[in-house]
Each structure stands twice: as structure tokens, then as C-alpha cells.
Length: 452
Image 1 (tube, helix red, strand yellow):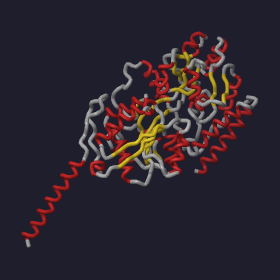
Image 2 (cartoon, helix red, strand yellow; image 1 turned 180 degrees about the vertical axis):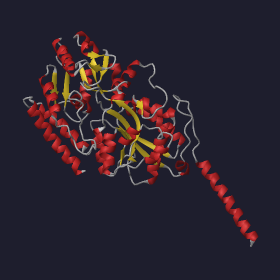
Image 3 (tube, rainbow, N blue to C red; image 1 turned 120 degrees about the horizontal axis):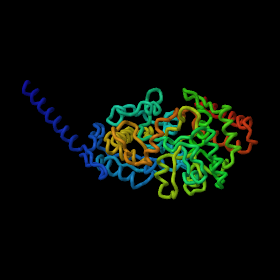
Image 4 (cartoon, rainbow, N blue to C red; image 1 turned 135 degrees about the vertical axis):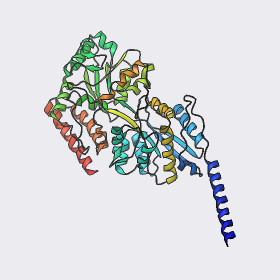
């Protein structure tokens, strides 16, 4: 009997060693990093090593810098698939005009992508709030997750669970055509070194000076839709005294204030400023790049990099004006989220892609630079050292305000806001009339927030 038992134990050990050997050989061997970065790849996660069956996942990305360019994204996909040959990644490129409708149609049809690259205002306020995204809290323990800035993690979380993995960050700002402002002797109203206005009054003085110099189209308040509407929001709230758009709990909207109405009334009466219900931010950006507008309200480092080859004048990025100690700017950052498509293999593959992209500093740096932004964890180096232009945009980062974009009813609020601007353009321009329109929009937005 002892010999039989011994023989059985020996057989079990042999089979166990054989199984380990098969698992090890099936795991994809690590490959060299892309040519742009020669750093070694992070080791493959254990869950991926054990996966043998082929799996196909989809990545849908909005056009954030080179994240919207096929050549850049395909480079990552090829490197990832070389390391994980059993995972195939199909990419869909979205724009900000039809992207939301395409996503919503896919979600309603049960065909949501596995991975989505966008900001928390969509991932958290729209999708995670509806229970559509997978919990990514476990990725905080990976090499790429342990150093994430806590404030950003909090914005990507609901009830302590992280539903979006932060990739890159930047500050939204405004911009002026420096050449036009210099010709109009309007540079005296601002501080070029800090990128700030001397005061709210001087901001309006500068607009008047440019108008008086003969450049009649100084700026426009675009309100044809929600595209890029962070510009029009901060154009209002910063000079109004950094007024909050929601309560601290992000459950109700609070923008219908006398201060906001007064600033909008001031814009209404200002020479060189127009309300334009026919355009959105993308159109305003094009008009600025073409030299038609002297000032733009929707701007950031990514937009500069995307348009710099078409600009033939000196660009000066500026914080929105305020009489407070510092402006409360919109902090834009972008994340990868994973839709819950009820498929464990696809979910694991999608999470593997996130870990691959973020755990190795060299690959992660490529992702951040492709966005034209800054990292969401301390890499210990200045990614834009020696780049004077990018350093100009980096100085706005300490002025991030509250990330109210995760307030409930976000999609409905955005629609209410640009429609309110259209209605304001048809009023007599008085503070009372404008406040009434803001109150109507706020009531509707809060009804949507309460319904969630």
C-alpha cells in the first residue's frame, strides 16, 4: 500500500510540473519597448499569462491630441499585441460632434466598446453613474496606480470605487492673438509672465481697446451646442468671482446667481463681443486660428499643438480674468474606462491593456505626451523641460478649480446651459432678464440631477 501511495504522489508531482511548464510556455514572452522608448516592459500580469483563448476587445477614443491619430494609436496596439498575442484590439476614432450619439446608440444596442478614452464628465457622470462601467479599484495597486494624485482618483470614483483610470491632465484656458493686442496697445492690461489679467475691469478694457483699434471681432460667445462649453462656463464664473457651478456634494447646480447674470450682462453690452448660436467651440477655434477673432475662450495645450502649424501669429495663453486671489480654472484630464459588457475575458483583457500602458514609465510617458498634456502621477521629471510654449500652459495647473463636471444630471445641464445662452442673446441684455433665463436652466438641470 505504501508503494502505491508513493507512486501516486510521484505521478501527481510529475503532472503538476508538466502543467506549470505548459502554462509558462504559453505566456507571451516580453518584447522590447517601442523604438521611441527603449525601457523594458512591465511583466505580464498573472491573469493574462493564464489566458489561452483568443479574445478581441475594442477601444473607442475621442480626439485628445494624437490619441485621435491612427498612426500613434496603432503603434501602441502593435506593441501591446506583440506582448499579448492572444488579445486583439480594434480601435474606433470618435469626434466631439457625433461621438456622444454614437456611443449612446452602441450602449442602447448592447454593443458598447470595451475601452473608452475620455474625461470623467462622461465616464463618471454619465456612464459610471448609470452602472455601465467596471470597477477598476484593483488597478490602484499596480505600478501605474500607486502614485496617482489622490484628488484625481477621487474625481474618478463613486462611493470609494474607481471607475476610470487617469492618464493625462491639463488646464483649460483662454487665448489671445498677441500681435493684435500689441497693435491695439492692449498688452498693458495683462501680465504676460504669469498669464493673468490685471483685473476684471482691465480685461474688458483690453477688449474695448482691440475693438477701437479696428479689429471689430474680438470674441464670440459660441452657443450652438455643448462642444467645448467649458470655455463659456469659465468665461462667466471666473470674472464673476469664481462662482461655483454646483454644490460641494455635486448633487445640485448653483449657477443661477446675480454675479453670473451681471457678468453676462456686461458681455452683452461690450463692443466686440457677440453671441453666436450658429457655432460651437471647434468653429470658434478655427476662427481664432485664422486670425478672424482676436480672442478665444476654448483653448489648452492640446489645441495649440493641434493647430500651431496653421497659426501665423504669436499666441498668448491666458487664465480667465478674476479679481480673486487666483482663477478657478477647469482642470481637464482624461482616463481609460472599461464598459461592463458581461464578458469576463474581454474585461480582463481591457484591464490588462490599461496596466500595460500605465505601469511602465516609458510607455506611460508616450501616452501622456501624445495627449499633449501632463502626467497624473509624479514621474520625477519635467516632460516639457526646455519647451517654452508648453511651460506656459503648465503654469496654469495649480489653479484647477472644483471638478463639478461629475455632478449628477451633467448631460442635461450642458444642454440647458447652451440653450440658455441662446435665449439670453434674444433678451434686452438686462441682468434681470438674464437671471431669469439662468434660473430656468438651473431648475431643469436640477430636476434631471434629482432624478438620477
